[in-house]
Structures are given as C-alpha cells and as structure tokens.
Image (cartoon, rainbow over all chains, first blue to last red; front, side):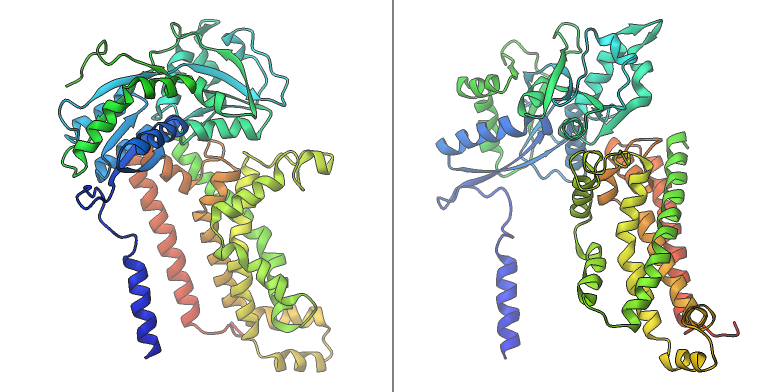
Length: 272
Length: 225
C-alpha cells in the first residue's frame, strides 16, 4: 500500500514543471516567452528582460549559446518565441528554413572587437600585426568556422596583411576555437599565455582580463545583431511586443550601459 | 576526410591507450587489495576511486582544472615547476585516466573476489611467496575479467567528453578527440564529417561490448588456457 502512495506522489512530482510552453495569460497567469539569444547578449538581455517583466505579465526563459548553435537547435526543433542572433548569416539560416514570422526580422544592435589578455600578464600590442610575432601560446576565439564572434575576428585578421600574407594565415595555427564567445573569454581569464579576440562588451564583463587593442569600428567587419519572432507560436503577440521593447529608449539605455551600439530601426534595411 | 578528423582519431587512440596503460597497473593492484585485505580507510578509498563514475564529467573536469591552474595544488606556483598539462594532449590523458579508473578498479575487484582464496592458500603451502602466487595463480585465473576491465576502461577513455573539453579544450589538430570532434562538426554543420566520426564511435563501441560479452560468457579464466 505504501508503495502505491509513493508512486502516486512521484507521478505528481513529475507532472509539476511539465506544463506546456507558451501559455497565454488567460487566467491571469503570466505568458511564457522563450528567448534564444547569442552568448554575448547574456547579461544585457537578462537585465532588459527583467525590466520588461516588471512592467508586463510575462515570464521569460532564456537559452544562451553561440548563435550558430541556437540556429541549428531552432531548425531541428523551433521551440523559441524570439531569436536574437549575433550575425545576419545565422538569422538567414533560420529564415531560409521558413521559421520566422514575416515582417518581424530587424537589425537592432552593433558591437566592436577587442584583443584581450589576462590581467596578470605582461603582454603589449602596439599594432595588430604584432599578433603574428608575439610568443603567446594560443589565440582564443569563438569558433571562426561558425560562431559570429569568431567569424568577425577572422575577417578582421584577414583584412590585415603582414609580409605579403594575411594576419589570419600567420596566426591560424595558434587559434583555440571555443563553442561561443564567453568560452573564448573564459580561456583568457584562466591562462596568462593566451590572447583572445572577443567583443568589447564581453571584455567589459570580466575583471580578469585587460584590453590590449581596440579594433576601430571602421576597420573591423560590420557587426550586426539580428532579432526576429518565430512563427506559429502561441506567445507570438507577446514576442512581437518584446521585440518592439528592444527598440525603446529604456532598452537602448541598458544596451549602451553594457557598451553595445543600438541601431536605429528606421534607418536599417528590412530583410523581408 | 580532413586532416583534423584523422588527427582527432589518432589522438584519441593514442591518449586512450596511454590512459588505460597508466591506470591498469596501479588500478589492478588496488583492486586486489580491496578484494583481499581489510585496512583502515578501505571504504573511503573505494568510494573516492568510484566517484568519477557517478559525478558529472564536467564537475570532475572543473576540479582538475582548478588543481592544474596556476595557483592550484598541482599548479606551477605550488610545485615550483610547470607540468604544462592544461590545453595539451597530456590533459586528455589525465581526463581519460581519471574517468576510466572506476571502471577498471571496480571490474577488476569483482573479478578478484571471484577467484577462490583457497587456491591462493594452497599455492602458498606449496612454498610460493605472495608475489609468485599473485602472478602465477591469481592473475591467470582473473585474466578474462581483467581483460574486460581494461576494455571497459579503454572505451570509457575513448568516449570521454566533459572532463576532456574542460581541461584540454577542443583545439583541432592538438587536443581535439573523437567525441569533441563530433561535437564541433555537429555545431558547425559539417554533417559528413560528423557521420563518419559517428560510424567510428559506433564501431569501436560495438566491438568493445561484443568483446566483453564474449569474455563473460567464457566464465572465469583457467590455469591451462
């Protein structure tokens, strides 16, 4: 008998937390919004989300990873209401799979790159070309094959030439690719003989690293964050409203506080 | 097939083999001690050795990362010299070795417990010393079980991911292994490469489990065979 009670209790416990996602706020319950966002947006989006939750009956759940990982997760199983990608390319990938709500896509944010080192190290970088000759062990990047931060870093390195070769050619054997930009940052935080290239906003989040060189925005590749709502989701209306909130002066102030560059939605081309 | 795929496979075979060899000898002796003797702290030692089996591999990796980092117990500042483990192939060996240890020790211990102690006593009465008894009687009798222990340890080492990626990273051509290469290929969208590596993993796993099935069906080893 006791065993049956135990099983019943277990089943009840299991059903808690198994409610379906995307609930509407019909019975005064907050709507659930699932946001897939690029790893570099982690801190800023959580703060913006919190401020949004304070003024709206919404409960936001986040999934932070490299934009490539998120895009591939969405195409495998589109279980998000909002996708915030650190590059247009991965947003294209999700759009080409027919998953975006028409008219919802926009470019909303920019950023810049910095070369960093552990704060306990002695590295100095007078000019980018010195990355070819300095005797550090690894150059920590988000995976330049697929993760936006790494792709931007690679195209910046490719734009600089050193003795007839691109800087990328000279450093690529020392590249340590990470699954996302925060992992690339983590490696530099852990080791003193590793340099890294991350977004300025990531470097600003860490007390353990120092900036050796800031890539001037006009010399680096154009960094564009894209946002969109996924289609056929029950929380679609809330998702569109949340996206509009990202363009609000309140959100812009938070983005700027973290070092991001909000883009005027009216001046950016639509992609639909 | 790209160069990095081949190098990931070779590195995996090399590090898994080395880790298994390093773990097997002390692991077998420890298993024998756990099976035959009682000594203070025995339960604690058995539990500690078994821990990597039940802990999240990333937790084990994190612990190792802290131990080998600059200020850690095995770090350059504490030791006075740099072992240069982190982010090298040596870190792969360490991660795989630690994660394979419980499988080797526990399997070997059960095997030794299955060897009748009276046979050892008889060998001793024939005038053989402890060492000779162990090598000439106990070890041959336990050989099948020990082989299974080694195979299990080796395959655990081949498949190790969490601890490896934490202390060795996932650097193509340097510290990328079979399992971390599958992870990368999948994330980046190189499906052909991911399928190939998946096939290799399936083959290695299948062969290993088949071998242990075969060994267990044969029953305990014999002195003649």
